[in-house]
Length: 127
Image 1 (cartoon, helix red, strand yellow):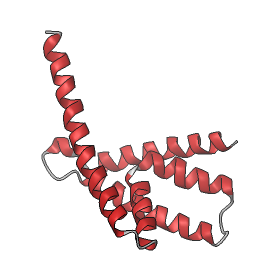
Image 2 (image 1 turned 45 degrees about the horizontal axis):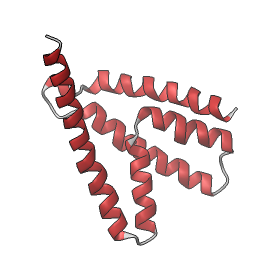
Image 3 (image 1 turned 90 degrees about the vertical axis):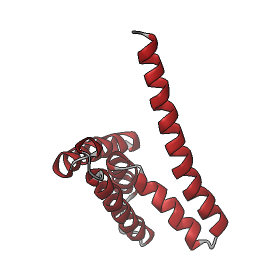
Image 4 (image 1 turned 180 degrees about the vertical axis):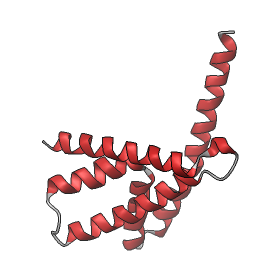
């Protein structure tokens, strides 16, 4: 049942993110990727809310999984990144916060560039 809750939430979240991207646009239109920006910030806000009400016992385990892992995981992965950083901040773990935030941003961009470069090489090799 837990896997079903996550899967159902993920499906809803992924469709929601797609609709936000259609509504606000992405990188392809030459502007700031507002769709992704809004989805990430909104997802972080909602995850913080879900975590907060979960701590008070207002959500059952299935609903929490559906919302936090499924829906928000499908809508954005940035929400969990923000949650982890919030937890580091709440624990006064400032160095870990800096390493986690900066490391994921920098290494994520490097990985994206490397993956893009690898795809370009692969495409060039098959021509």
